[in-house]
Length: 73
Image (cartoon, rainbow, N blue to C red; front, side, top):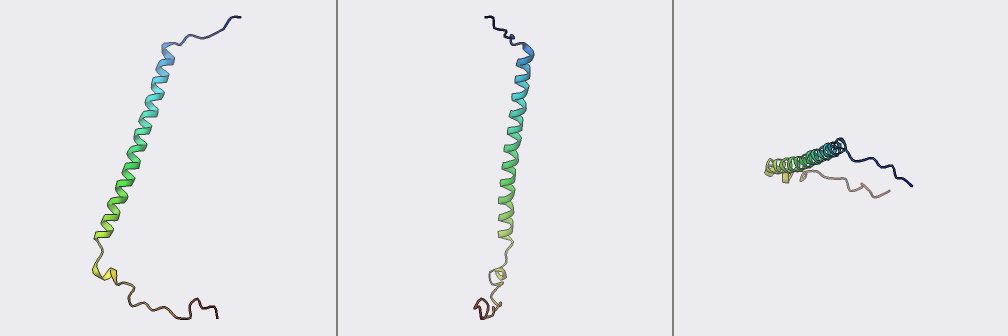
């Protein structure tokens, strides 16, 4: 029985190295994008929270709902 195995050439090692570099850079890019989305959401929430006025706390104080709502008659 003879096994026909192809020896690993330098070209195969370069392809592996290039593939690993592409996967690595893609992973870094995805991590940066995820961190950017998280930081952007936090900054937006803080901006919206700091832009509230005292009147926003009582914005629904004058709204009266009907007492027949949801009774089912």
